[in-house]
Structures are given as C-alpha cells and as structure tokens.
Length: 70
Image 1 (tube, rainbow, N blue to C red):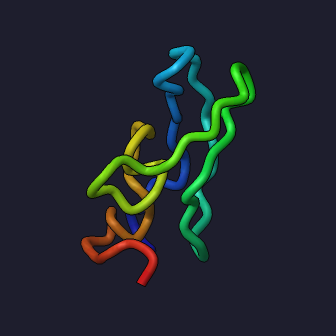
Image 2 (image 1 turned 120 degrees about the vertical axis):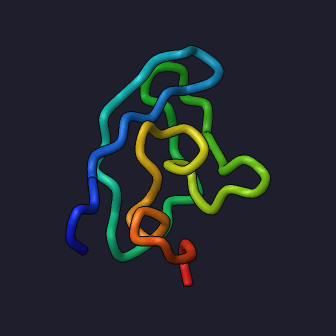
C-alpha cells in the first residue's frame, strides 16, 4: 500500500461541515453519520463508498487502481 493516503476530509452535503477521518483499509464504509447534523450519508450512484462520494481523497483500493470492496 505504498503512496496511499489514508486521511480524507468528508464534507456533509446537508450542513456543509467537514471532518478529517482515517479511512479503513480492510473494509468499505457505506454509511457515515455527520457528527454535526446527524444525517447519514450513503455513497452516490456509481461510487463504492462514502469517501469516494464526499471525501477529499478516494478510498485506498481506488487509489491503488483497483476496485473497491472486492
């Protein structure tokens, strides 16, 4: 996993608040609860996880050029 960034900042589309999070390397994250407004985020159509939809950095498998959650 060389050159893979594990920190991504998720921005909530409802309240526009952001929070830096460390992405898991052994599982996909399909749900994320915004700690500010409590909305539960789910991946957008075509994205594999919440980091690919709302984060500043895509998930580790996508960064490595593979598919997510295989």
